[in-house]
Length: 104
Image 1 (cartoon, rainbow, N blue to C red):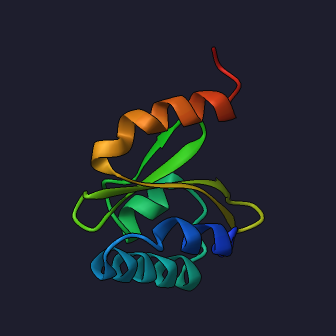
Image 2 (cartoon, helix red, strand yellow):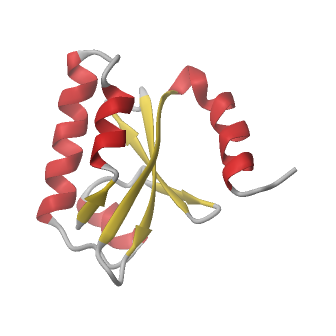
């Protein structure tokens, strides 16, 4: 899989701890080493905790301390970075996703 918006992801994790950055590095290696064709394949090969909501795929990062939200085009093998948030900021995510999805 290929990650689009690498710079945006790097910018989003810049202010977080080194262990959060290390967890993202593990995730990036996993996506680079795999060509997933479905959410079920991700769950089988990466983590059962990966979820999909409104077309976004949500990865639990670093023992469920962070959420990494992406869009995946399985046919093109491309992952588009959207958000990286610690669990306490998940209410912020709701508002951001509503704006992005143009929901009132």
